[in-house]
Length: 123
View 1: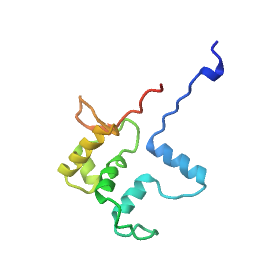
View 2: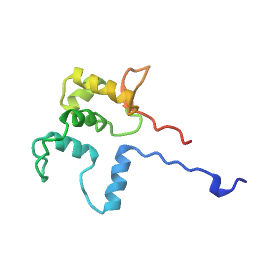
View 3: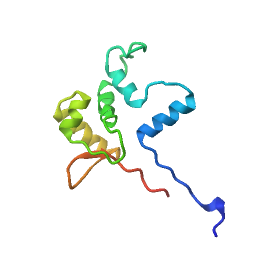
View 4: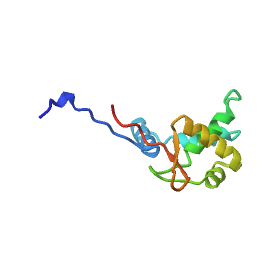
């Protein structure tokens, strides 16, 4: 039997699970990442301070696509993503291609739909 100190343990969490852990650890009911991104896209987030004009709305809009996925492995079409993120399909596609290049999204070769990229295997 190998020494217990030599065994590596890896835990992969979905974005929703990460938000739940962060909220539980902080003891608050603060909004999650997806809510913060969508809130930052509005001129005045509910209950929050005015948005800093120095923030990149383009970056926030691209990141908002990541918030459209609720469960691991969930696949969404570009029109569905665009509708939920409130942008045109061509803009959503451009952002999705960028997120694929960054390794944050992947496209199913079979269904041609998008999903969050799988975490890399532990090294």
